[in-house]
Every structure is written in C-alpha cells, then in structure tokens.
Amino acid sequence: MTRFLRFKYALLLSVFLASSSASAAGLLISIDDLNQSGGKGSFELLLTNTDVPGGTTYDIAGFSFELNAAASGLIFTAADYPSGTPAYIFDGTGQTTQDPTIPLSTNAFPTSDVSGSDTEFTSSSIAVAPGDVFSLALISFTSPTPVTVSGLESLISTSGTVLSDANLKAIAYSLPSTAVPEPSSVAMVALAGTLILSLRGGAVRPRSAGS
Image 1 (tube, rainbow, N blue to C red):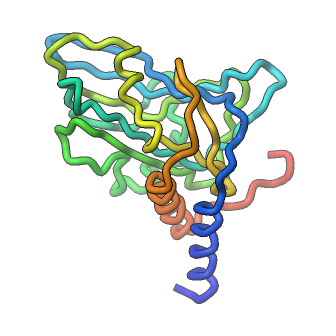
Image 2: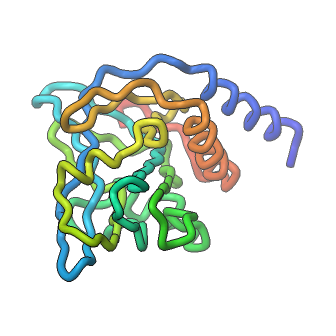
C-alpha cells in the first residue's frame, strides 16, 4: 500500500470518528413483511424516507444494524440481503453483492444478537428521496411464541444501528416510536472499517455535480 493510501485511510477514519453531528431525522428504520409459522419466521428491516415531496434526500453510503433478542427467547437463524420488494438499498452495488466472500452478517448462527453491515461499492452513495423505501436485511428466526412487529422493533439496538453518508458522517434516523441518539463510538468504528474496506477495493468514486 502506498504512503498516500495509508494516509487517506487514516484520515477518513479520523474524520468519521470526529464527526458528532447528525442530520435532521427524516429517515425511519422499521420492521415489515413479518411471516411466521410453526415457531419459525422471517422479517425485513426497512429504511424509509418519511419526508414529504420536496423534502430532504439523504445520500446513504453505508449502514450497520443490530438486533438483540437475549431477553425474549427469540433466536436468529440467518441474516441475508433481500431480493424482493422493496429493493435492497445496495442491490447489485453493495460490498456484499460485489464480493460474495463478504457476507452481510458475520455472526455465527443461531444467535440471540444479530448484526450486519454493508456499503455502497460502485458509487459514492445511494440517494434516498422522500417517500423512498429500501430493505436493509432479511432476518430469519425461531421463537417459542408468536412475535409482533412492534415487539421486533423493540429489539433494534440503537447503539449498533448506524447510517452513514458519503462523507463518513452519521445520519440521524428514528424508530417507529422513538428518536435515536448519536451512534456509539464502537458502532461508528465498525462501520468505518466496512467503509474503508470498500475504499480499499478502489471502487468508490466522487459523484458528479447534480447526481
């Protein structure tokens, strides 16, 4: 690796960790498409821009998520990127789809605490305009009792669920019933590492004006 590249990676990480401000909340992370039968099921983790037409468009360059079900009895059995509707936010352009050896989640399944992350790999970011809905993950689970959407949303860890823009700056989001505080430094470091991996592949390019 050249001295310039080493400097660039160090600079990007320091900028990411130093950023403490977040955008005004217009993004919502929620649970949808819950299916369950015989103690097994699946659901999708969705990202929605709730702004009205003419509102803010958010450029998403990376995300991480975490769901913790340790106190519920629910067990996660898989975390994959979805292929249906709504579309996966980095469909065909994310790190996991560009390099199949990098999974969405590195968890050992089954587990009561599931996490995953991905970055936009072929351009600087993906625009999420007002009204847009994208899927972040398809999660499979087993549970001794039926689960509800609101119950699953309560499992989303706000310290491990992070959105980032193309400048490696955290973007604020909300859950269906609560606003979400700044992400923890641990989660930001994890997402910064994922973003730097995509940069190491040399595929992130600046967006042209107006793109």
